[in-house]
Length: 257
Image (cartoon, rainbow, N blue to C red; front, side, top):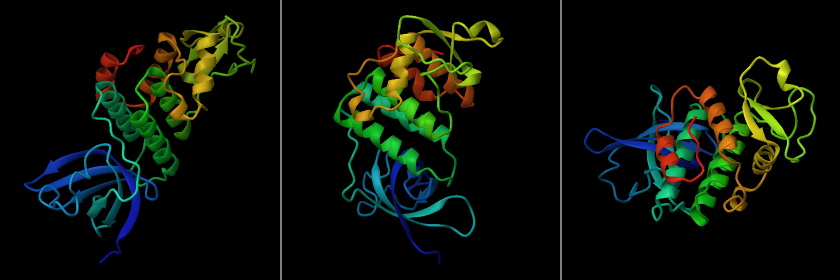
C-alpha cells in the first residue's frame, strides 16, 4: 500500500459522489493541485466533518492510488492553520469564490504550485480579516498572474521602456504584449489596445507588489484598469469563470470584459 502523505491544502471545489463519498480538488503546499475521493465523507464526523468544503484550509492526509488520477483522502483536519471565514458578507463570498476559481483555472494537476498556494492563502486571509474591494481583487489578479508566468507590465512601455510617470498622460494596454505602450509607440502597433490613464497604470503596478493584507482600502485602478485585467485573463483562460458575473454584480468598480 502506498505510504500516507501529508500537506497543507486549500479546498478549491467539492462535490458529492455516490451516497456518502465526496470528490474534492485542493491546492496544496507540497504536491500542487490534487483531486481526491474521500470515502464516507458525508457520514464520518471524525475524519472529515466540515473540512472538505470550498475555502477550507486543512492538513490533508492522503494516499496515492496505483491506478487512476484521484488520490485517496484518508483525513482532513484544521490543525493550527489559519481559517478563512467569509460567510458573514456577500461581497467576501463573491470575491473568495472568484479567487478559488481563477486559481483552479491557472493551475494544473500535481504541477509545482507552492507559491500559488501562498498567494491564494494570503488573498483569502486578507479577505477574511479585512474586506472585499476592487483593490484586493486587482492585487490578487496581479500576483496570481505573476506566479503563472504572465507578469503584466504597467510600469514602463513594452516597446521603448519609457517609465510610466503617473503624470496625466495616456497609455495603452495591449493584451498580446501583456503590458502598456506609451502614446509615442502606439501608432506602430496594429493590435487593439485599451486606453488607460498613466495613474491607473501606476496603481496596477503598485498593487502587483503590495502585500495583499494592505490592499483593501487602497486606491484601485478605475474601470479601464479593471477592463485591462479582465481582457487579459479572458485571453488565457479558455472559459468564462462562473464566479465572475456574480462578483461583477456585487463588487463596485468591476467592468465586464
